[in-house]
Length: 360
Image (tube, rainbow, N blue to C red; front, side, top):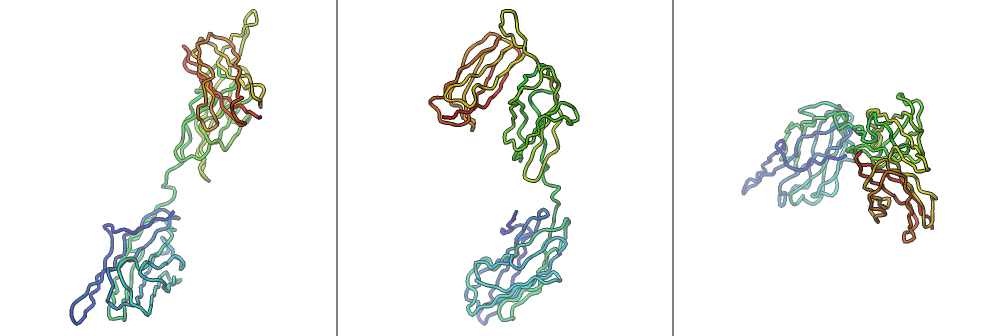
């Protein structure tokens, strides 16, 4: 990251040099812009600006700095010309000094940036004299100052930046019973996270891991294979951003339910459930079934994989039972789609999603 300190702030340093001419006194203002602050590894830039030099017959200058190499380091190729000059000679010495010279056959004209010096913050700490302007020579040497003017430097550690947080687990709720044998796992969004790592296990120590999936880009994981009935499971999630990984979330546990049958062959499910479609892949029709343990207001919708709703497949009030839904995608192109079931009942709201694949 590069932080440009190229505006006048309270700590800006200004040197005034008076050039005595037979007719009048001319003042030149040289500005060294602001103090330096950042974190280890950051780049910061010193900008040197001058007032109007037009007509002052100044074709050259020499500038010297010293710096605290425990906090900041400079490289020769990070010293660049400003808008008023087209070349310069620069060197960074082993004894932590910067030597800059400029000479031309034509005088410098105009006002603005003479040069910029970019350094990298390397150590934690502060120094009120972290960079010192030790010499400024303008023109033929008649007008020079030895200002001994310091830049203050303050450097913080990277550890002071925001720590990536783990997600908060949402569903299935911790300790929930009669959970769907193909549950949809959901958790909160984490600021700064690029992806998530999801783990499901049969024991509280996560030794018997069933699923360990990384690269999850959304705050949900859909279980696509049936879990065991009336069995305890444990799950957790952590956030990932680049090379930074959060701590694990709290460990949640749940117990799956069962599906029972009544006399006469009519299914009376004990849990909500949305099955995988069959066949899958398909062309152009497929069937998906769902279980309702209570009378429910049912909404089933079709989405594309970007989350855009394409059409409503079902809107109805249903008694408890097992239902089949035939889906016809003859008007759609090949690809993956999502079917989402929302069921509102006296037990609350149930929502599940399945991925279906159309191949023409």
